[in-house]
Length: 125
Image (cartoon, rainbow, N blue to C red; front, side):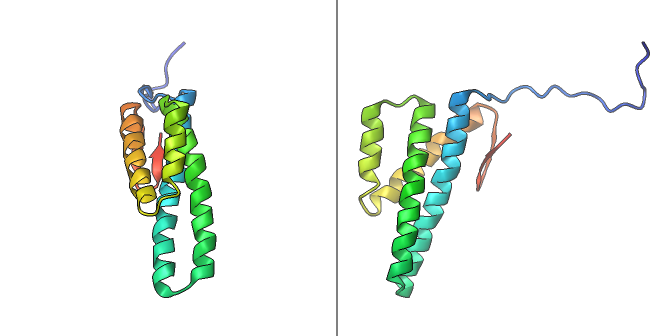
């Protein structure tokens, strides 16, 4: 069988770890990023004097951050005690934002080591 001289070369696409744990970290990191952005929106709404809408945005950010924390912590192999501690920290103002930023940083490091490209809005293959 002859090869086609006009065929595009085939590249080796290895190097990206697509295990279940890494996928949990990837999906959880996106939720963490959205929660961080919603926390900043909440601060702007409170400064603008719109408390009711700010409350709704806070609840959405809290839900996203809790699900994101469980996904990232599960993907990183964290124990139940660490997960409970992180959930408790989500209810402390300003500490929750710092916690989300630290967890996002750790998830970014893990994803880059797994071969993902990590941008502003999360990881992509």
